[in-house]
Image (cartoon, rainbow, N blue to C red):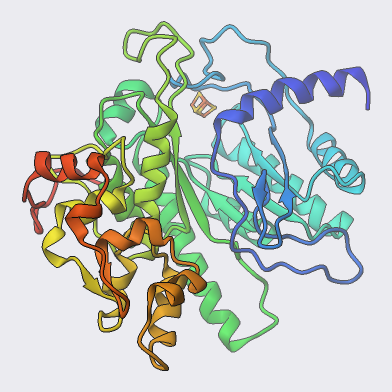
Length: 417
Ligand code: SF4
């Protein structure tokens, strides 16, 4: 690799590190025609089911940008070194890195140069060359450029496993404040288009097995958290709307890293605590896999997630009237809500109790975190006394939160678009 390419790589990989929306879950692309690569779950330093840590080449095509989003290092007013890859350079890098076993896929984003379509055309061309000229079957995630035409999105979906449109800010007001060049509609419109195309492709595949795939790993988005004062309530409400209305595969939460002295933004040296990001991901997980609604997790009275305990435990402590739950009788949906019991374990409990009444020993064998769950359940064995065995920290929290319940039917005054 030449020094020039190395320099570009260092600039454009560094500029891409702020984008967190790059896990590879959900694609089932297989190696075909003795091609190169195989998409697998967990690309980008995530762990696969068999424990492998896999990675992808995560770069920008360029960090030149005609826009001036205050929270972004690539904004046009920022005095940083600029670089741009050619389409062929990205293709060559991907293939070379893949052959050396450095990566299992490509995550490609870009600043906007000239205009949205001009940039998007180049991103699509990279994916097309990889698939058509190199028979590359590894994972490809393309970032779509707000304002790009439907034709280009359509082409992108034929080559990429996943497409994403970053909404950037949780609310339209924040977007106007920090990214005045961008319009919310330019993000919502492509999301809508992709939703329609993905659904249509699913139907087509049912009728014609050989129909080409369209973005088989779906679409995702990313919100920057903590650059503006939105609460977790607003962030999670927005995310739940995206899941419902746009059928997104994932919403990613990227804690803002202060990079400028702009007085619209938090000061340098005050990054968003990592724990806030973690709690948002936990709450997101509860919404997607455990059937929790936003208003069960946060409320206008308690608009922020508890930093000290996870959202599931927090919910349980606010709803002690339903505990302890009899593990041998309760419905699956109720068992899933017990702290220390996950979806798979809850299913195992329901299946195992058909044969005998479950005891603590059974629960341990099933893999339940009994140390956490024991305060909230009863089973066939001698019961723990809920309050007596509860650690002091949890007792205090119950006393301080009392019987306060979250409002079941509130509707936050937040517009999706
Ligand atoms: S359009 Fe994208 S790359 Fe350009 S300044 Fe805004 S966030 Fe950064």
